[in-house]
Length: 146
Image (cartoon, rainbow, N blue to C red; front, side, top):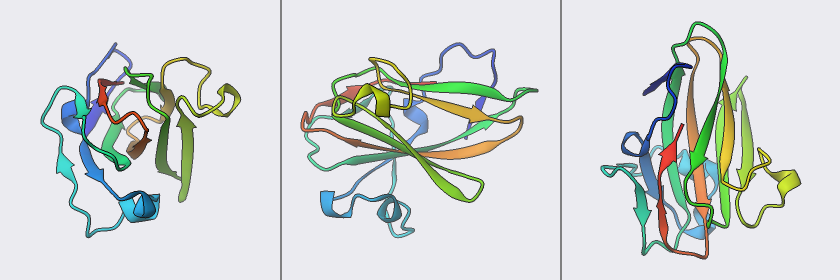
């Protein structure tokens, strides 16, 4: 669990995420949610998968401990990824957002040249975020910030 409040200016969450590689044919959210998957803990300060050809999945849980609702921003330091997708459950429905080199600006979660997503959390709300990264550029190396 990653605890957040509005006083946190920037937080590298790379060491607080789990990761999973799924074959392209099985790389859907429902496959990622399967309880039979072997999610692994990331032990590095960065996200680095230089030889990975399959889409990568990441997951982490956030909790807003601030006294008021707040919008946090999930930022990826590497803009050279074809597609970032995030998924989270809100009011019993899966919400998805996307960004990346292959996504036109009007379809991105935020108008930004760096991959970024807004995450709105109410006071004491927890949310598990799933991130799927797909790229022809196999060099996944970036920092993950909130």
